[in-house]
Image (cartoon, rainbow, N blue to C red; front, side):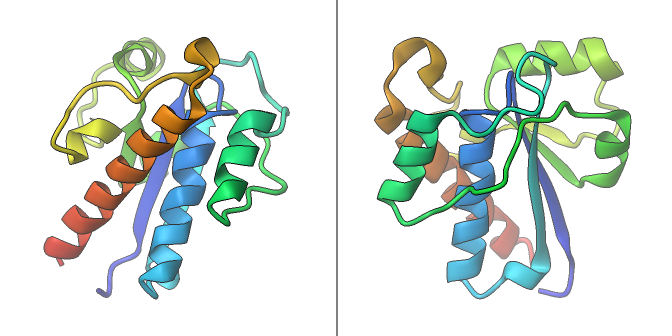
Length: 155
């Protein structure tokens, strides 16, 4: 694998699902010995949580699996991000609607749903409303594993 894969995970606030996906994907790439082949980040569609750290229950769920997220603070996605990243992986259909409002149509076909890389397409469970961080963990892990497998197959 000679290509550097640039992936941006996006959710509404960038304090739960997208940072979980960012750090799970970094962990999977590291376990596969592919860290140098990836640039992985996360961002929000909204401005509501800008500057806030990863939500404590999300941090705890990552820590249960030996994954840290220290230093991560929420930020909003920009047009420069759309230009820079090869793949923009969103957590749900609301994120898609918000991105279309922000940037228009996805003319470069960079945007996809994380769960599209699994056998059960749809939205990643939103723990902000459910409080079920375990369901979110399962969705994020399965989605990131599927994404990594797709990238590895294509190279």
